[in-house]
Length: 116
Image (cartoon, rainbow, N blue to C red; front, side, top):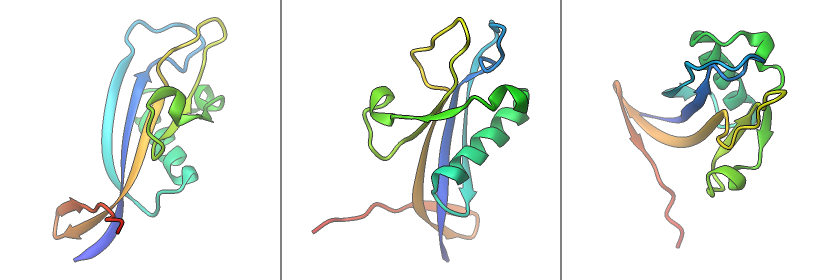
């Protein structure tokens, strides 16, 4: 039994990082164990997932962290966005959440803090 960090990453616009509009945009969700829940760790994971799904890394250079409240109204979200030169998207490129979890064997159990 060990305490780990799980990242839940949803890339909402795979295919939109290109300067040319791609009609085959799709959404991909991944849950993965990570070293920590830092913004840099989540950014690296977004880049990894995007590349695995066909986005060229050079097209992802313009990805910036955005205000999560503008998109998902949840303060624990980390949001990354890429806007096109001639296209502005109302949906963010990626929404990430990091949570502590208890790992027992190959199973994970999400932990929630209880405030007294």
